[in-house]
Amino acid sequence: MLLAIDAGNTNVVFAVFDGQALLGQWRISTDAKRTADEYGVWLMQLLERADIKASKINGAVLSSVVPQAIFDLRMLARRYFNVELMVIGDPRLNLKTGLGVKVDNPLEVGADRLVNAFAAWKRFNQALIVVDFGTATTFDVVSGKGEYIGGVIAPGVNLSLDALHRAAAKLPNIGIQRPDKTIGTNTIGAMQSGIYYGYAGLVESIATRIKAEYGAPMKVIATGGLASLYAKACPVIEQTEPDLTIHGLKELYEMNSH
Image 1 (tube, rainbow, N blue to C red):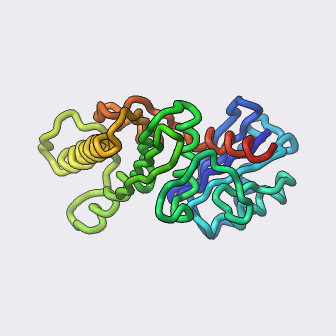
Image 2: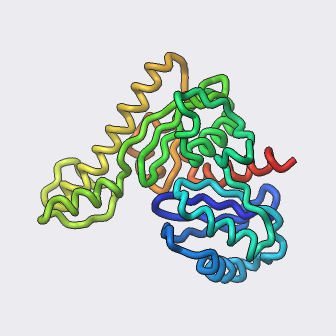
């Protein structure tokens, strides 16, 4: 069995695979101060509830955009599962990423973005735009030759909502949902419309511009927690893949462990 870990700025996602089968997936809020034992106690309880034997896990892989978390996640793998953690993006490991990286400085590209791009390319084998609704809203562009050629980074939906609440004393902290109408007749309705349709417009505009600049057909897929919500308002999004990063980690582990 394989333990796959995606450490993002907001959440750390843990998943266990048995071959091709995804047995379970859990998330915990990201805290760079969280220790290996804190992760371990929490995760072992969840594995037990899911009837997954920790002793059966014989591999572990990580992508992380939080460098401070890597040490304790590495200790988690050693202490609780007796395996060495494969860290995607660690230059010392010289891992295969499955893609050519054609940007000014390949080391600047976040591991999660490379994992998403690789997973999408392997699944669809064509030119792609991967829109990830995470802490940041990112657009990762893969050419028809299987090369990562760049992307776009915009503030994330929840990040923008939080900034709006913090900067404007009279604006409440709201959850994101699709409003019934565009014209808000109260403060919450107006904010929901602005954040929902505003980001829908951002996604449509940026994806359309990327496609025009690339100059050839491209498939647009979306991932991240809000992907299914925004796909309803963005005709440019052709498909949602909520578990893209986790499946990409599994595939990269298999590619590099043989």
